[in-house]
Length: 217
Image 1 (cartoon, helix red, strand yellow):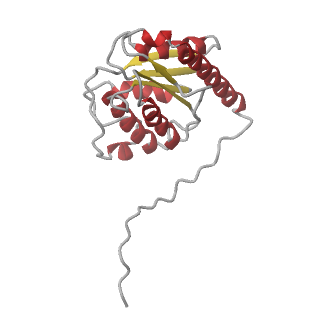
Image 2 (tube, rainbow, N blue to C red):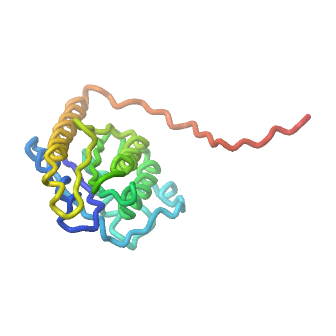
Image 3 (cartoon, rainbow, N blue to C red):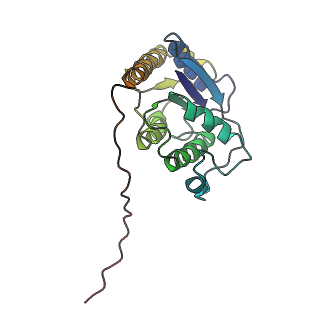
């Protein structure tokens, strides 16, 4: 089994990277392979809502001038996805938002290609705003039918300068517990394959919330 971790921080060796490494190291003790991909600092395009991924259905975004398709391919092949972002004005970084929007559309366009893979997210803040950042990443998992791994507290570390989050002892404990829960969930899903069939999901109905007035008689 493998987890792909996405680092949305532009800082090399920053607090987000440290927390992702903490989770990955604990996952490794369970025999789960991990890979951390740093997307922070990359020049990424956001989703243009062109709809091409719904036509091609090849698990790729039509925008080819950045590494997004390479990263998405690795995530589609993985058993678990771990997202990490620092808190920028109470939300994720621009790079993480670009990944969320483009990955989400491509996954939905390809028959929910991330369904039943385990998702988890971590964030870092100097002081406040981190819960909203965490929610932004978890919202991606919740719309893609991905079981979400949680911890003994919200998956948040605190620190401003690089290295400060590594002194947040409760934050580190939270990361360890997150890894334990993620490993347990992944192993449970793997153990159920061939025995417990995946849920039968009906996606045939869609409804918009704008209605034309009925013609008067």
